[in-house]
Length: 538
Image 1 (spheres, one colour):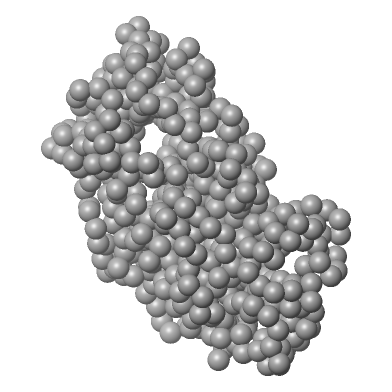
Image 2 (cartoon, helix red, strand yellow; image 1 turned 90 degrees about the horizontal axis):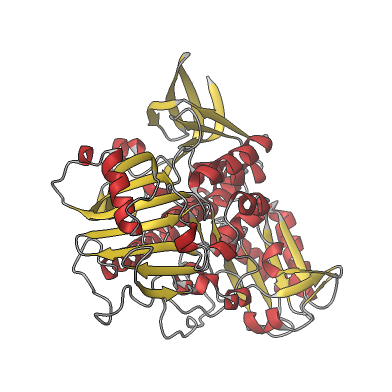
């Protein structure tokens, strides 16, 4: 019987990222994917900056950007009667603005899923700890107190695998979730769509206003051109189809006619490469865990594409989960640490699915049209400006030790983000130097715990190193401004709201676990207690 620490079911972006992350922590995994190779359809395209931060930690940011679209070729969001007709509105999303550089060292990226997955697959295969088995299906599984036993079906026959844990990243129709009997709650059928992949040279009507999305608003036709290469390869969504319609009616000829109608160019040469019907939904699993099985990505939450959060939320799910699995598997944390995956990610899944649903309805998809603030507004102001949702989420669980401070005050928690080192929040980005080289503070995180202390906080560093050594926990302890790491502008210290003798403990996923504004009488005892609590060893 084959063995692995973790069995990953599903070889899309979420499953492949899980494989990469687990390998970086030295955890063996086996990924199985029923399709013979990576996706042949663009599907998701928008990778937000938080996910790009994760890809940066994984060492694949540059490769993903090389496979995607340069940012200057997708600057806008455009609404029009047709590509050749009247333009109704043009926006620059906050995500694409220069102000985003104050929040994160990376930019968002447009990279179609069929271009992204091969990049992640190559990287996952090169890391060594993670095995990949495409054209292999999970035929069944059972679990007991010590692990999961699965039957895998491939062309050569069935095999058995024994794993300590299983990650279900097998999509919205997750067979694993169904086998576990985990219910979904929400809106199951928001609207019907046809997703068309096509070749057509649209540059005469798009090159002067390069956009990620071109929304077409006509009586009887709501459609969207989705930029893939910005030249001749496009996605095309036809939204709000009749609920009782027949998808077979959308032949290549009819799809081409709709593309020409939306473009406003009756004689446009169009090659239809494929058309896939689907139903948008806003559903979240009532649980993210059953025993030794964890749901991630669309298996855990199925949200409308309005906002581009599906892929991103899934990648961030496994980013939260991977370090916890590694800590438990390697004996550095108590099993209760794994409870915090659901405690932290389920509330976020519900919140981001709700925001995606509100976005959809404000766009007139799947609900009363024009639910935005004014009849002339084509989408609510928050649409594609959700910095608060992307960066400002705060976790509450036993892996976070509150310090009694209130959350940062923001006017609109969906759009507004105020950097903070309050426990539970994403650690703040600030430009620092390490041995004279300029980098983001975020570049310090990703593979281990990091304690960052103020310039007078060496006692915290000594205490953290001793506590980590005793607990066999991988940890870096650094003072900012009193060693090889400097905070030349004092920006990080200011954002963290600590005194020069204070400290912040950051988890491997970049979330703040604990903070002390200043010194305490017995730093050694404090750090021992902090690590034990965060790792569920207390």
